[in-house]
Each structure stands twice: as structure tokens, then as C-alpha cells.
Image (cartoon, rainbow, N blue to C red; front, side, top):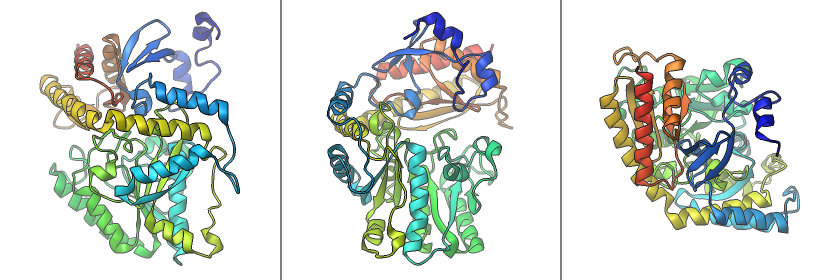
Amino acid sequence: MRDDNFLNENNAKHVWHPMANAAEMRANPPKIIQGAEGVHITDLDGNRVLDAVGGLWNVNLGYSSEPVKQAIFNQMADLPYYSTFRGTTNGPMIELSYELAQFFKPEGLTRAFFTSGGSDSVETALRLARQYHKIKGQPERTKYVALKKGYHGTHVGGASVNGNSNFRRAYEPMLPGVIHLPAPWDYRNPYGITDGAEIARKIAADFEDEIAFQGADTIAAFIMEPVLGAGGVIVPHETFMPLMRAICDKHGILLIADEVITAFGRTGAWNGSRLWGTQPDLMCTAKAITNGYFPFGAVMIHEKLTEAFESSRSPLATISHGYTYSGHPVGAAAALACLSEMKRLDLAGNAGARGAELLAGLHALKAKHPLIGDARGKGLMCAVELVTDHTTKAAPAKDVVQKVQDGAYAEGVMMRTSGANIIMSPPLIVTAADVQKILSALDAGLKEASK
């Protein structure tokens, strides 16, 4: 690798970063991350900080999972790549499909379709939903219902069901036939209420009203994150997802659970659907499936759909969709090792315990700092929302949010900003001491921003 001077001189000069303004990146180049170990990352200047971002919600096992690294190394030596299109497959993919079917058995998800990541998984699920209805003789079921504040990736389909205008405006027009319902959010909602169960009932009523207006026979699927992640860690009331499931069942609409973030223990349950006691028809996974060490994802498919696809003689039942890297043997090997390590270390259990400590600490900081309007979370996905006024809930200027992040970094913790939110999603192997470090750094950042 080139020396540090070269890296600093060329930082952001010849690359456009995702989710960033190119001019801002040139003016204020991003931190160069040089190394990582355990739950810590090290930048080019030698600063070693606790990664409370967890890579990007995905490094659940931390940066030093030797079984996963070894699995990747060994598979690279044996079979670094081969296509899974039309007549060829590979051993790791076969083994992984079996293990995932066992892992998601409580949800009735018995088949896997492999992808290159989360956006691919969402796009695949949206396509399969339409295809299912065509196989069943209802080709007019093409519309999707989604939630405002939801995030579903960057492909055209996923961006169309996204519920945040920041990810849509520059790329419109999006797909027609997408309807958005209010987010199940007790801090901000159009109903002006804070009772989560009542909010869930009102959104359910809005869903029923929209179905009556659109026509149930035109709607293919409803898509939601069990906990809305990039939208600000919005935790629905426990009745919300079951209510939406019941409405979908009543009207023949498929339920897609976007669990790219929540599928492997982050909420304190092994997946978000299980957390809420719900069986989706399709589940999108990626991120932690390989601990972020290899781009990989999987759409898990309910037996209701597998029966329809596998028993149909219609040419429309052929899955004319796939990716060059679907079922990549190295990715599959990494995922197998990750599944084994997740279960061995009981990541879901630790996420639940440490997450409860983190959320309690955030509520304590909320009582201490007027800058915090709301603190929320489930397991090890938590956030605080910053406001300038607790009545109007007005968001602070961007530089105030940046001061909190910078102040926390100076105290040895990397955190993520999203609008007025400070988001924390550390590796699921963090200790109680790590949680206290996160809280202490956030406290320092809030003090800095309040000066």
C-alpha cells in the first residue's frame, strides 16, 4: 500500500463516496480507517476508538472473528468462485441453505435465494411478490405498501418503497403504485398521540382504508422493517407487526420483512419477526450474515410461496432473476461460520442484555441534557434524537449534531449521525464496560455541543 502522505493527499480526490456530497467530501475528506480489532477501529492518525456503528449495522461478531476469516481463506483456496446459474451449484451454498432453513424454521421460511447484499435482497423480494401473484392467477397485484421513514436500499424498487425523501428526490420518478403509511412512531406522528398501541391501531385503520381505495386485488405486498433502522431507530409497539400481518392475510397481500439489519440477533431476538411473534412471507437478509467480511445476502421464502412456485407448471414460475454472485461459495462459507459463531456466543442474548443497559443510560442522559428530545432502541440498535425545543421538537443545525459526533470521537467512540439522530449499533460482542464507554463518550459530545 502507498504511504500515509499519498493516502492523505488523494483522499476523496478520485472517488465518490456513497451517501455523501462529493464537494463536501473534497472539502472535508473522511477519516481513513486503517485497522480494526475486536470492537475497535484505528484511523490513519493512530486514534483507536470503539466502533459504536458496528461497521454499518453489520459487524456483529466484531473485527477479530478468526473462524469466519479462516472459512473465507480456506474457501478461497478450494473454490474461489463459480456460477450458480442453470445447472451448477457448490457445496457451501447447499450447506448454508440447509442451515438457514433450520435457523428460520420458527418463521416457516424453508427456502433461500442468495444475493450480493441488502439492496439486492429487497429487490428480489419485491420481484418474487409480484411473480407469486402472477402464478396464482392475479397478475393485477402489482402495487406495494410501505412505511414512511422506512429504508429499503438503493435499487429502483427499494428506493421506491423507501419512506425518506432524502433517498428519493434526486432520482424521481420512482416506480408507480407505491403507497406509504405513517411510521409507527410515538415521538412524531400525524395523529398527535404518544400511545404506541393506539398509533398501531390508527395505522392499521389507514391501511384498511387504503386497501379499500386501491382495491385489495391490486396490491402485491406490504414491506416493513421490524425496527426501522436508518429512519432513526423507530421501535413499533409490539402489536403493530401482528396487526399488519392480520390485515395482509385478510386481503391476500404478502408481508415482506426487511431484516437486513435485524435478522441475526441485533434486537435481542434472533430476528425481528420472531421478536414480534410474526411470520413473514419473505424475509430480506444481508449485513451480519457474513459479519460484513464479504458482500452477501439471502431472501428467505415462506413455505406458502415455495408450494406455489414448485407445484406450478406455468412458465411464469421460472425464476428469471439472479446475480452473478448469487450463492458465491466464499460468501456462503463465511455465512456458515458466522451462523455457528453467532449461536456459540449467544449474540442475541448479549444484545438484549447490553442493549437494555445502553437504553437505560440513554434515558439518563436525556434527563441530563436538554439537547436530547427522545431516546429509543431495541437491543443493540439505539438512538437519541436531538432537538432545540421540547415542545416544537425542532431539529438543531447540522453543525450541532456534528459537534456531538466529533466530541464522542475525541473521547474514543465512533457514532453515526442521521439527520438529527445519533445512532448506536455496536458489535453484539460488546461488554458492559464497552456500553459505559459509549455512554460516557456521548455525554462528552453532548456537553461539547451545548457550549
